[in-house]
Image 1: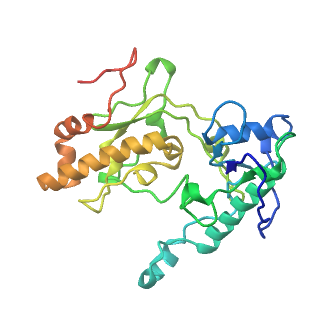
Image 2: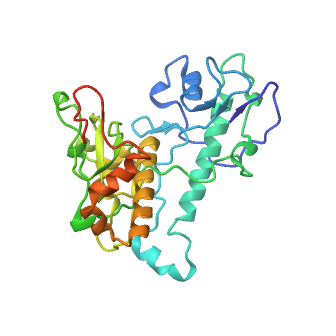
Length: 299
């Protein structure tokens, strides 16, 4: 969204306009400003002409309202349906759900601009297709918080319990094969059509944590590495590792490891067996040890 100097014409999208709202901010007089500045990518201080905002506002099932989050459907087809379309492969994506999510984003844009505070003309808030290079002004790809995940060497799955612990512990489990770092709480977004156990959706603190090389591997494919949300990890661990800086850290590590494996001809298991050599290479591109007071500085 772009904040223009002067109002500009923009057609109201022909999409459903239900269950939209500020959610838990609904009673705040500064709700609009808070949402605008939350994901603003250009600008500072109070909302002003020249600002750009890449909207990301959640949905609150208990309040039956929210922003451009789409919790009403699952983006990926079932394994059976994905397998059936291999002759005409479309990525295993449910295009109806994707279209509905796009409609939700357009609806939120319109609702949000119409609720601009006094002093801001709704016509000043528009979708600027030039920013993201799309005809509709939305992002080229949807932001996915959770997806299908790998199962690592020997069935390894990174558990949430290795990302947390008592405060005096200072960091999560320090793996011998650590290859990336992360620091973000377990942040679970509920689904409208799926009951998630209370212990999962409850607030979960973490400590600054490590990502092991095993989380980047796959138990069936010896020359295959993963990173980000597709890592070998539990649902709850993913809710803490899915933040972009952590994905960049694991992605860098996976890239270095892939180059190492290609150059040496080693499989993922053999690279794991040579982890010290691989860690030396990864350290040149991204840190793999926490260095704050009380943390084990590594070797």
